[in-house]
Length: 488
Image (cartoon, rainbow, N blue to C red):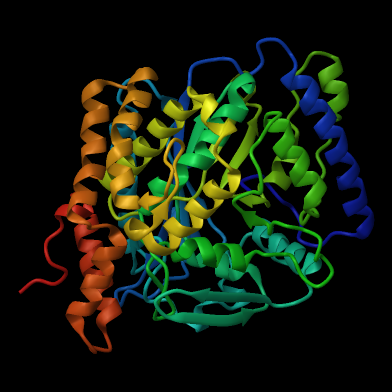
């Protein structure tokens, strides 16, 4: 979605040509992945942090373009909602002290963007769902003033004529309909990228599908939306519903455009790219002037711009990425974690997740006896119930509480990190944040609920909670050691 899009309206002929180019791109990708040495190299990690812009009253501030210009940093980019920005952090080797470096850069960038936001009367906040959002914040004019997002909106409305229906049943119930994809902007995330050689891609991707359940359970930071108390990670249900292009004309398709998936990967990254082309209609048929088949035949490295653009409009929670940079490589993009509460929390979440992924990718035998349906259920149970979720795990006969499972998996994650060359103190320090968070049962979602309960029936409770949350988020202290929600 970061690629340049010059127009927002397309003809049916353009969609047809784009579809043919996608087929050629898949052939080129298969040939490229079979090339000896392609994508080889040490594991690297990168991250993207999405942020909300808010005004002095804690309400969403629709000034992302002006704030980006004030920041003057290419790492800051626009997101779908005009009250969202994204920070792209610098990729670095997984070996060494990557999580400390990511946390430091993220904190530095948050401060810089916050300073830029002040020039527009605003602030930034890292939180999964902004608690002060209202139904009136999701009109079409809330979409960022950028061609690619208007094109995305038109393209999604082309493939789904019906309104987008949201039904989330948690502690309370939420049901609503919207005419556009703007509800996507209610969600902000902390996305981790792991560079992965083609030969090991299936093992790493399947390990990510397994690992994300318990990691999500201990990372919840999105307990409400539009004033309703819903899931620990309401973002998961909300994002899936807000971009679900299935309607009465597509009853045959199992997965929506935002999905966890429906089976273990057997044949590598190409299997996932092929599924995306086969199952999902294009929404932005922007053509590149490259002939990918000709480039591969001549021994070159294709951009595969059409395939990358299409893949950017299919939002699996764990997604394959092809990147022609640095000689060409593949990444697994881990998209399910929420933004916030602090950079220390996000670094710990990343360490726990990547440690589990690396460790389980080195133990491929587990997949033969562990049904994909169990990993699927783990993901949604974790999103709904957090540390109270009952989760399955390879080698265990019965499901166990997420809190207990997470504590049991910390040594596994540490083993994975150290096997990848992460410094011992680096691994121990970040995983200790996860351990203490579980023992104190204090996630971002739990803190937010406690903060609201402390305010009682005060009509300004959500704004007050957000102000205190933001203040503590910028201290850098992880959420489990935050003081009580309100001073005095």
